[in-house]
Length: 230
Image (cartoon, rainbow, N blue to C red; front, side, top):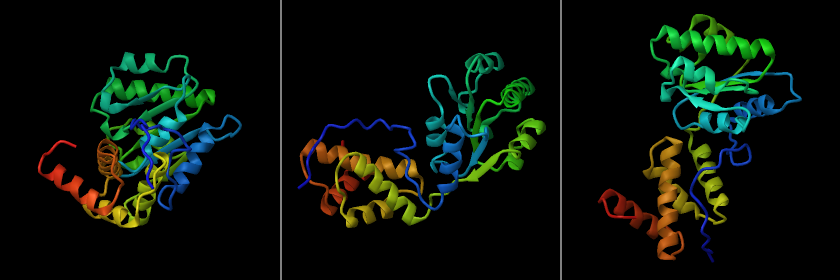
């Protein structure tokens, strides 16, 4: 019998909540090394498609003394420097979003050089491998290849199935295999959409006090497609 608990849907970015699979095992292992103060490795670059877990791992590395920032936020050079002033590590996401601005490229390169020279950990991520990050300073592109580099790819069905079951496990519920198959068949390949589809089903199940079954999953899918409230 399914029990109903009021658990928050806000994602918790930690190594414990990360779903390991064949397509991300190396990235997880490398990220844990960077986060370990006792490990001598201090440079990591992750790349892979959107929703594959790069941000999750970077935010798992980030702490109260290691800020996280995404270049999607388009920080000004002074703002970028101030965020990491006195920080214990450098964590920067979405390097592929770097605009064609020499001042921002220079600021990021100088930050990288400062942290790398001092031996403080650096973790960065983007959609593409280092040599395909054409908007970066050439020096930074070459330096990224000095450290650990890992690609994440969770597009295979086995990995996506494990993700759904992990999210369900975090909610302390069991999801039947036919429901998992239905979500896999109707959601896009992106992990974020996969989790969103499950959360819609979970919320509706909680609201209606109904067990998660294939008929319920179909009902929720129909409501989403017709624009009805979940």
